[in-house]
Length: 261
Image 1: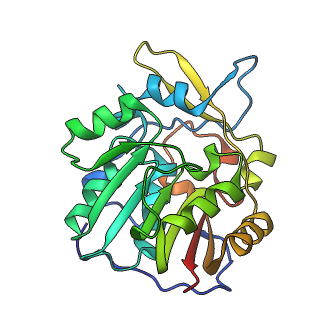
Image 2 (image 1 turned 30 degrees about the vertical axis):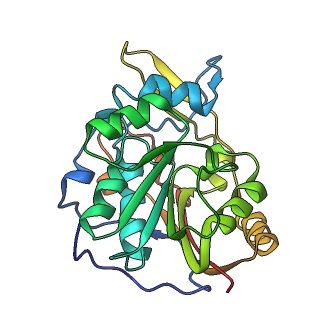
């Protein structure tokens, strides 16, 4: 991860793009397609904590797919320099980004609502971990220089509460990078699904936060929008059998925020 190129972004960078570069590190190894883009019959949605408690045992393999590859591309493109800074990975899961931040010289701390996910992160070598949710972080005020939220904000229905809490824990001038599902994916019927250790298909509840509402929530919270970027899945990177609709429209957004001094 050290030395990964970053593409500058501006507050007017809003054109959807596709990710076409091939992955070269272990974080984006090829895996089967697990993002379901059509309704799954009568399967009920699990709350995030229950879902990730079930998913923890298989997440290291099942949780990596073309969508998370695209998320990794967006993090690389928009992540500020982190060396020597205290960075929070909020919704850290099994610690994928925590380990990457440590390699880049950050003092990274991971927060997650799932005990089994945190246990998996500890087993992977992550040292600074705590249980918590986005609207009640177990961190002191003005204790972070930056924060990374990858596919986690969409599990929280209270976007204003989450961004206000984010503003509380950031130092003045601190930043946050949010990479998550584009709201239009919900309109296209996308579902977040996985297979648990027993091989059963499960679905995770998520909430679509669109750009205008996120910008409004940021302003209310005292956070300035530095960048908004949308990205679509590149059909050439999808495995055989992926639905044609998988590469239609924006899949993810990257939103970088800065706390006002």
